[in-house]
Length: 299
Image (cartoon, rainbow, N blue to C red; front, side, top):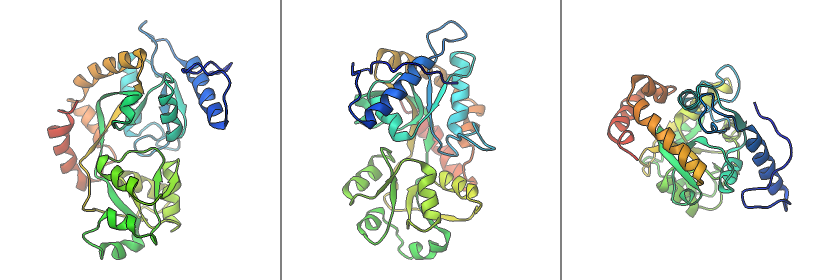
């Protein structure tokens, strides 16, 4: 539950927002500041979690609400941190990232650590993994794209007749990020399902996306077989998702507490089941190999 009242001074001391974007950030800051909940166990305040709809990692509505991978990890952390569910705030991912850059006191699960983000955020140990990333195309176009094998993302991006879209501010790993940065500016979207709807309607030709997200989106559209997932030669190493908090004393203390929990929980069968939930059975052997040989060893 979120409670809001007056608009506070932002972390940078700005009291008069200069434009619409600043108003959004101040409103977000106010809601989160007022909603900080005191721990049931008498410890320092629990985090407010920023959430957004990114099934099956975060599921904000419908029959599967709160059954996503990050939702279940959030519930586990809440139980270990305070013994009760913490407050949540739903906002588009780009706004979440912009607010963290401003030092707003909340965290979110699913952050990818990059050098640019480490300038304003602190990251926990990995909590889950994004893998594998694929070229997602309408199922009816599978043969057309398969004929281009070995499929290359660089080649697709260079073809100006092909339409794609990228989630604003997202990181898909350094290799893919670099290719996208070098390409002509693609369409940008703010919500995951926005791009999948465009692909379904054939207003886009392909997406660079994780099959679990594409598969869930297809089912939500009522067409479980709507999309095909194809590998590409620049496929990056697995990308680890982490808890991301502002780079403040509060954020650092919270990440230390979260890391202590993760060091115990990540080795348990129950936690593995959370990470593997929603995965395609064909991908499980690879995911399990990465979990044992990279995920658990990564800091």
